[in-house]
Amino acid sequence: MAKNEFDIIKHYFAQQQLHRDDVALAIGDDCALVDVPADHYVAVSTDSLVAGTHFLADADPALVAYKALASNLSDLAAMGATPAWVSLALTLPTIDEAWLAPFCHSFFELANQYNIQLIGGDTTKGPLSITLTVQGLVPRGQALTRSGAQVGDDVYVTGNLGDSAAGLTLILNQHHCDANLASVLVERHFKASPRISVGESLRGIASAALDISDGVVADVKHIVDRSKVAIEIDVEQLPLSAELLAFCGGDRQRAQQLALSSGEEYELCFTAPTAKRDALKAALAHTNVKYSCIGKVKAGSNLSLLQLGKPLTWQLSGWDHFVVTNN
Image (cartoon, rainbow, N blue to C red; front, side):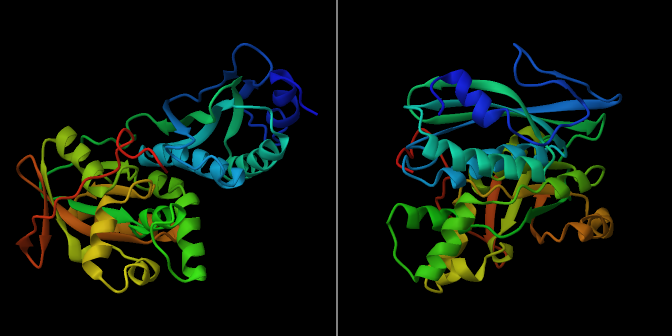
């Protein structure tokens, strides 16, 4: 039985079977040592998940672990980086082995799937929170950023949009629907698929990219700001799942609004020149990931929504961690 921080590390976090050749020293010393291949950058991202903000305190720990790592892997995907190493800082109210066991099993299962090794971190006592720092590798000169969009580029998203918001609404008991439908949407909230293969395939094709963590209307504005362009989104082209439409009772406008504002989707949004449409199709064919063209990059400095060629005045906002505090 784990009695202290060092027991937790020994029994739960030093047990990953995956051992990458580029890790010279991992858990057990003051620092980890890793070997970076020549002509590569290290892409680094840190995110925290806090009970009461990102997940309910009584949520399934296996789902919490998956969501924590998947959301961080999504940041690497957005940069076109290949996952390599991860550090975990875990704060627990008490040593709860019934919580730790499924958390670690789920965490390592996903980590092994993406060939990412846990190389260090910290455990401490306090309100339940999880902080991950993921590191990946990207060839020099090939990283995807938010600042390269050009006038005339197409705007794309992967997957479907809005399901995560629908799942969260069900988790918070703010909506009721068929049990099977609810199960699907709740799982999509917790278990997004990091688009690593898509990000890697977009190197040399996409002009700008990011992942959708705060909602399309919020995140696309980052490309607008960093690239100094305008973007038009055609709401009729938003990819909507059959489950989202069923959740919305067939109300397509409501589904479109959820698709635009839903946070924690962890799909990729990217821009690419029209001339590279065929190259894009060929590059993503092996990923088996759906992607949709939803708009166009224009001259200017704003984000606008269109429907059948006419401007919309919907007042939508994305996810805000300092406003929404009960999920």
